[in-house]
Image 1 (tube, rainbow, N blue to C red):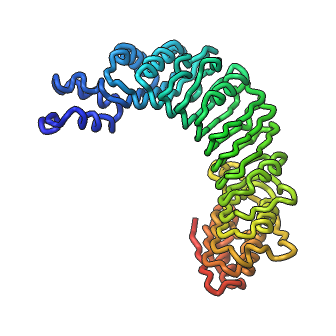
Image 2: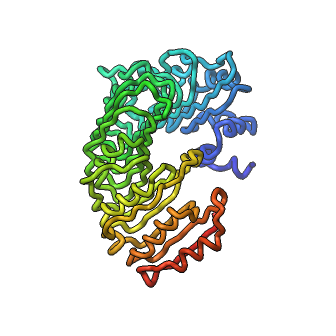
Image 3: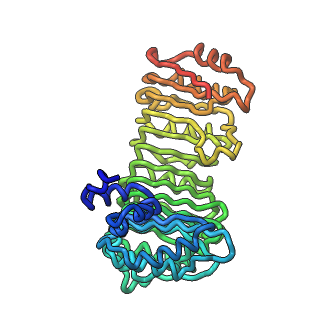
Length: 420
């Protein structure tokens, strides 16, 4: 310990920044040198649960106002109460955030829920010029003073199951973020938002998850001309309009069938696409830039969606067939019987090089698709099948025999079988 204590304060603070704040605080008992050293930490991470929340509240109240770091790089408050006592109140959250904002806060991460419909974010947060990252989870957001507010440095915003008083706070928050690049929004069961528009010219990455239980939402619109990555998971029955994405390179689309045509028609510039839908998306759409396709097969008739993508993706190089992890409990996974295209898709003749099939059951419809691709993909170099025999009684040996004996258009294609 003597050798460590001999290090300069700057280096010791770097070391303490690598451990949880609770551990850093515990070093104050080592010696007079260490007693107040932690109070210069630029990264503060307060995490606790019901059994010690009251102690945590008292500790923060006592020490945060006296914190000595001129700049707080990051403040994280993860507070989960399951008792009815509610040791920590919304006014406590507001006070702590205000103190951090006064220290040129750069990153704020707050997770807190309360039965009270009371604003938990102080107005000072919305005028914080230094804030770069803002993450809010579960808390209530009731008012954003747009006439005076601006977050000129904010680039990353996460809003996870935040409770809004109405449509205005969400829209107002987006409107005061002129350089926002990364936005992640989760809408759940207790939302009161009926409609919204994500119109952020600077946005490059968007993750929007609309829960099946989000019954209040009626419609939304996404208009993001600089977007490069989109992950849209919408299991509600709300109307959506997705447009103006000329720079999009990668997309993950998981939507109900009535919305798929609108969404798919707006992401045709992508090079990498993951898609899950109950239905095909209509005619007249071409993916001439698409190189990597991941198709989720948890829905009925996924084979028709696969056939459609093969026909309209002339430069496809890699095809993945699997089940999205979050869909593992849906247990549909029927795919439907294979109706092969009337003519061989261009991608099979000239570009497809890799096939990865995770969860290959060896059923007739699976075999027909696999055999068709092997028979017609002239440039295929590797076809890998992760065999799944847990739900369908098809022995691995029979699966392997069917595919190894099938005709292959590519004489150099390597067939790989892996037991899942």
